[in-house]
Length: 498
Ligand SMILES: *[C@@H]1O[C@H](CO)[C@@H](O)[C@H](O)[C@H]1NC(C)=O
Ligand SMILES: *[C@@H]1O[C@H](CO)[C@@H](O)[C@H](O)[C@H]1NC(C)=O
Ligand SMILES: *[C@@H]1O[C@H](CO)[C@@H](O)[C@H](O)[C@H]1NC(C)=O
Ligand SMILES: CC(=O)N[C@H]1CO[C@H](CO)[C@@H](O)[C@@H]1O
Image (cartoon, rainbow, N blue to C red; front, top):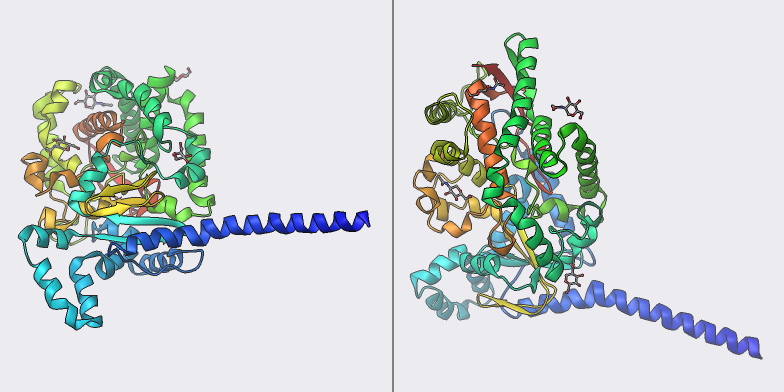
């Protein structure tokens, strides 16, 4: 009798436990996503229909493999359109769901009678039409994560300048990247983040960075010496894969700054970090989300290296006999400027600031290949941006690569490498300067940006005054996402001593 009751109790307990688990799973995987989507839908936001449990992952995977097949991977690069290579599905969704005109079009198909009024309303002010063109707001989902894609300029401004701690780093990033980044400044939110930021920020202020210039020059010279010996070994010219050199260089700088040692001591640490980074972007269930958005850039600055000024555009004529510099005129202009400003001396802080051509080349390279491809946030409570109520738990993604190449903002040559557009600074280069954000913007702007810029400028100044270089025939143009945008097969340069 007692055994019977016990068994019964046990079975009902197991049943209740199972039911509880089932309800929780159901809520997390089905009910909550549905609730969030319906809240957004009520405000007129649409998006690709999600499939059960996976959301839009299937479509993303398909689009990416298809795209990888038909993108020409030639040298020299035939396009600077990173967005098309990295996010082909966004291009499609933006057209289908992103703009007011498209929405009108779809309504027109369904309810022709409704449209006249709507068209009249949307056609009211030029402001409104401008926003409609730019009005790139739609939703999609990665598994059970609901994401609002926002490239609408006013909303982007609100999001990027929002100082509320309620707008934090997505919590899934914390789960995925915990191994690599810990509860560090890149992934944490709230007071944990604010505290870390307060400790780290002063170490990277401009006057601290100025104090590191000697150290940076020493690190750069180590690299130059190694190039020199490789060039001599190669009989006057060497085909150098610069990726590892760039990593060693920035690793060396950081390790000298942090550990007071040279790179050979820090090297072990950086090798392990690199391995972790690669593992982290492979292993995870939501691997494409790590790959998709490379937003965690706040202190990671080592990777700007490979996007050196210059080797990014097609030669004007397009003919390919002798290996030629990609932008011979810009390499020459920067070299002339460096020689003029420095006159053979090691560049100091004043000279670095005087090098305008170099600045323009770097800004243009960071425009076409921004290290931060996506700025991502999560609404940790119900929030409002523009006219849109964003419910708690929804993620916001701003596609920096797309903003940086939008012809509406940059003009018809937005996909061309043309540093001249920065001749009058950022305000001269585009209509809405706040949409230029190679290092992110607002309270979470990359802390390492001063250091990264000084490193880049010093290194390039030293390289162009000692060497001339052009893209190697080995080089294959393939932008690739791995936390930050990287050249998938590295960057090979043919380097000669001047
Ligand atoms: C780095 O330090 C090691 C030992 O401390 C030393 O042997 C090596 O020469 C140093 N390298 C450079 C480039 O300073
Ligand atoms: C590179 O050029 C600079 C400036 O002309 C010079 O000071 C430096 O010694 C050179 N570096 C190497 C490794 O030759
Ligand atoms: C380059 O971009 C930085 C911000 O990333 C800006 O401060 C600087 O003025 C720009 N320089 C030019 C020449 O556009
Ligand atoms: C990394 C981190 O601190 N994540 C937290 C961000 O804030 C939400 C809500 O307050 C927490 O649930 C996360 O754990």
